[in-house]
Image: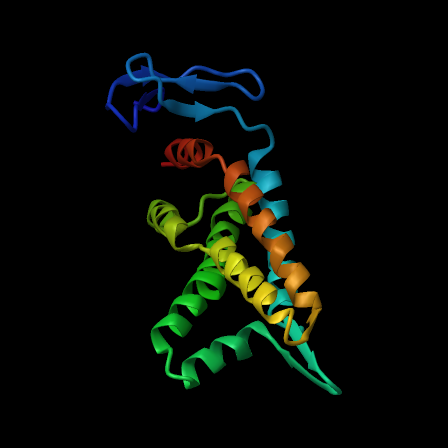
Length: 200
C-alpha cells in the first residue's frame, strides 16, 4: 500500500503519483491537500534546523532587553525573565513561557536532527514513527510569536517610563521565529514515511 494515501479530511484513498516542482496533490472529493512536492526537503529542513539551533543559543546567551532609567541600566536574559516571573508568584505563566519558548522549540530541533541526519546518510533512525508523531504533536505548543507580541506590547507601554535597549537576544529570537516557520514548511513528512516504508 506504499503507492496509496488516505485523505486526512475524508479518508478517500488516492494513488500516489510523482508531482512536478512546487505542485500539490488535492483530494478529488473534498479538495484537501494530500501531499506536496518539496524539492531538497531533507537538505533545506536540516539547514533551517542548524540555523535555528545557532539562533536559539544566541537568544538564550545574551541580554534580551535593557531598561535605562536615569543613569541606571538593567538588562535581562530570556531565562532570567522567566525566573523573575516565577519568583514574583506567576509560576504558571513562567512554566508556560519556559515550555512554549524554550523547551518545545529546542525539542523540535532535536527531533528533526534525530530523524533527518540518519536519513541524509541513507539510514533510518530507530523508533522513527514514534519520534515523528511526537514532533507533530508538539506543533500547537510552539508559541514563540505569541511571546514576541507580548514583548512588543510591553515595550510600547514601558517606552514612556524608560529607554528601551534591545539586545542581541531579541533580534536572534525574532529571526528564530521565521527560521522555525521555514523549517516546518520545508519538512516533507510524506517523504520521511516513504523512506521508512522502503527500509522495513
